[in-house]
Amino acid sequence: MAYIIAVTNQKGGVGKTTTTLNLGAYLARRGKRVLIIDLDAQGNATSGLGFDKTKQTPNIYHCLIDGLPIDSVIRDTGRRNLSLCPGNIDLAGGEVELVRIPSREFRLREVLTGMQQKFDFVLIDCPPSLGLMTVNALTAAQGVLIPIQGEYYALEGVSQLMNTIELVRYQLNQNLIVFGVVVTMYDVRTQLSAQVAEEVRKYFKEHVFNTIIPRNVRLSEAPSFGKTIDEYEKKSKGALAYHELAKEVIEREKKTRFLYA
Ligand SMILES: Nc1ncnc2c1ncn2[C@@H]1O[C@H](COP(=O)(O)OP(=O)(O)O)[C@@H](O)[C@H]1O
Ligand SMILES: [Mg+2]
Image (cartoon, rainbow, N blue to C red; front, top):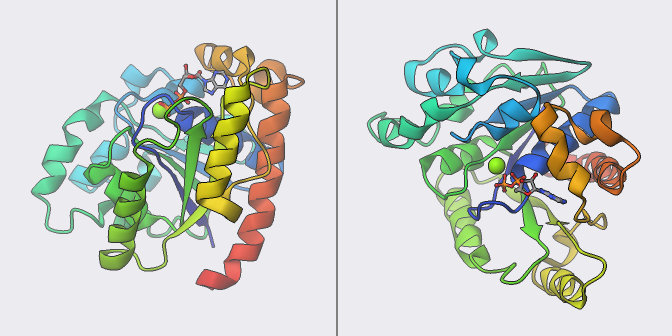
């Protein structure tokens, strides 16, 4: 059974896409069958894997809105165990169009029916909002992975995010849990980063992964070449960190399994 993770934080630029791509790539490298779903109109997860996002029609939008089967949309990324369900600017109108659909919060869950047997992990790269797209991701998922940027105002907006998760749990998906919180773009040279990491730990406690993702310029360069960090520079600090995170995620998923079995 696939474990479905929504990578969510309504703040932009906190590392959602970077985490989705590189965590996904290392889970795949460790033998897990991974599907990455790009639910963001920016299509950064799609281009980050080397796809021309302007040419990815049909995509997840057409599954959600037109009822196209996801099988006909999933792309082979050319990497073992790693598949992509692309997204792009088509999704920009999706929020508004979803409103008119009766099962609007459940569309992604419905679309993913049948994927449970084909993958071990499904990672959903969410847009930077708490709108219907993100609600769809939270309704389809078993767990939320929250990247928190290790900078000023790190926890700003977090209570809103937690409220949304609570609401979804109460009304749409009672099994949803906070799977984990990962501190990203951590700068070892600054006192501030250390303080932020501590604050995050105080707030989220055991939810926080031991692995901290450092600020590493290689991580920001890789997507412009359509490469994961493992392909771009596997010895970089960013690569090592995401590999460690993947191991932690695999361990945690095993422990979490009994909760939803
Ligand atoms: N650990 C990191 N070190 C350096 N740059 C990073 C790191 N993580 C992400 N970035 C860069 O920061 C920007 C925002 O990251 P991204 O993953 O796109 O965030 P989001 O998907 O939350 O908007 C991107 O340009 C990305 O390449
Ligand atoms: Mg993104």
